[in-house]
Length: 301
Image (cartoon, rainbow, N blue to C red; front, side, top):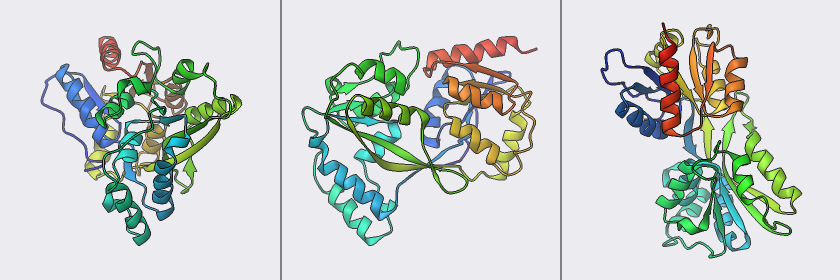
């Protein structure tokens, strides 16, 4: 269930790790960290839902119909891959959207244009593309030993190509801010500007929504405890930091005793600005995160 916490196993004095990724992604990280001997649990700070408006579903259908006109299709995350390739029939109550969904779902096996390049900012998105059948040779992404997995790292791989007059499709999510307005991503917007400066036409299609979860009272209490009990919070999104601050009864918490691992410098800056006491940056790779968590644990009294 989206937003539901996953109970950590009984592990005595094992390091407590709070995974804030969306529920489905968090389950994978929780299992991996638990296997490493950590008392990991999920406290999702971003909820993922399919787009439901008829206009959004129609835009997705049109994007599929026009794929052969694009030189590249860039997916911002594994969730973007999942929602682009698999349409949830229950996500669109409008009759028109339902008909569009049926058109896509009944179209048969997916056939991608042979010359289309599928692009990913990191290994998680690459894995999602491979899982839906995209050949490895058709995917561009940063190397596994890259210092960071983000839009800048992807541009280092593809930026020297000839983009003049070519079309690029960016498949992304919609962020629903507290005021109801969609929020953009600095990294994705930066990447779009690089392509445009290189002469490409950049189009966008939103295939899912990101929003703050509705927490139970138990989850609120767990978050209150975890801000001062030595737990290490794992953040992979600045949006998750903002969603935490927006949770009822948490906006006035003192985070000076809180500890966090941030998988990108922008996220680390957001945490420090919010008053977190210990913020350590890490590559968004499992082994690096485990090493950073253990380094924090070794510094605890």
